[in-house]
Image (tube, one colour):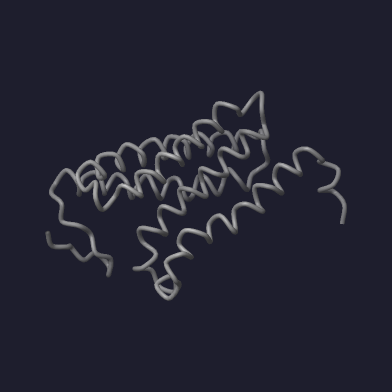
Length: 168
């Protein structure tokens, strides 16, 4: 099977179903990147946070569905990405379902989902991205977690102790 080159990134030429799923996957992925970051950076509980959080979750649903289609088409090459995507979807759903009554689980689930989402992106695309292509492959697996874990931990701590975040 030959690859198609799009902007320097090799895309598997796995047929029209794969390419259609990929087009929706990329659009949903871009939605997740922007809406997830926006939700994380807005005031918790605000209408904006809720709106962007829902957009992230729905984008993640589409990412998971399209990932499932692409993985079924190319299982041997995509099984590890399917595992990461399944974990990201499960974490996001868990976080969303706990948004009202268990805010720590909400923060942890949504944060872990975003970290896993980015991990999948970098594992799949890192070797073809400028600067990332110079990193060892283990960096694609580890950097999102090394950056995301302290951010998630801080968000949970700030929720538990809001007065601590007001100190200089």
